[in-house]
Length: 136
Picture 1: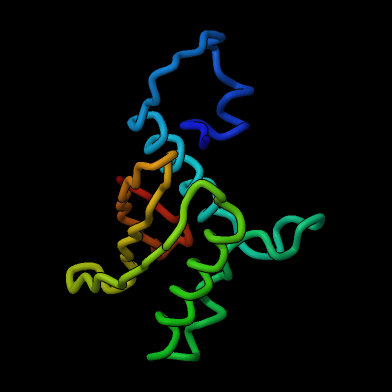
Picture 2: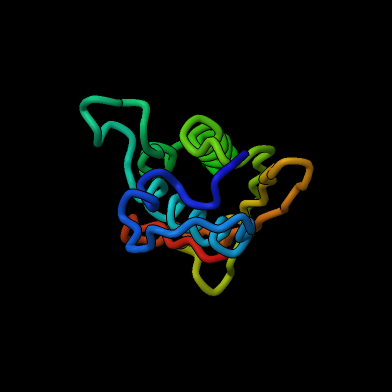
């Protein structure tokens, strides 16, 4: 059975009690936090695991208009590789005319808990400063 919290969240938790009731809100919040952290790591930042992280968007700038699709595929593959609680990741680009220097993506994924399937959706914004903001 999948845990609603990541291993890191469980280790750092102040709560030592267990419940038999599965908490979908905790699962959603834990995955949101995980994505927030993961998407703010640039590929090559970790010497011990060079494949961990998303590529710096500046690597794709010269490849427009294909850059957005390549970045989407890179993010999708990264999430499949390093966030085992989510499956079936779909990423769509949501252009924002008011903020042309930001890239906004909608990430929709499925989480399987026993015989139950939960759909999760996250809005992800790559800012012009290189920071990634995840909301869900």
